[in-house]
Image (cartoon, rainbow, N blue to C red; front, side):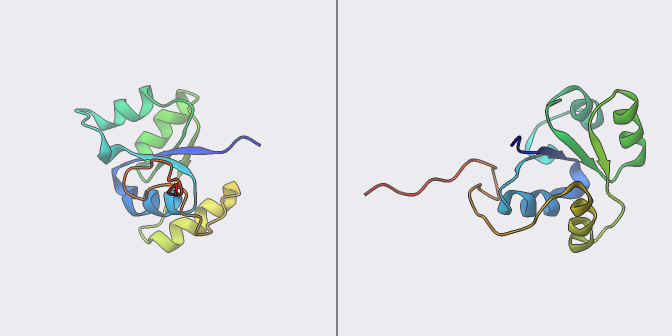
Length: 109
């Protein structure tokens, strides 16, 4: 099974955290120093589904044949419900750091 990977625009920081908590490999544009965030999102990380609240950015992504999903709600709980249409399951897995997206591992004794 291929795991879905995401990159979230600046308006979806809380959603990015919840995706990470649920075990999804999720990047957040706010973690990068990008002068033009729209261009950065369109030109990089093509293996990831772009999650955005920006209608213009979504349309550009579709035109560029980039995997993208347009989020309409401002409420993170409602955003999570919207993503369920993609088959996303929000279960607390905690195998990724909610801040930096790194894989977590159990300590060795």
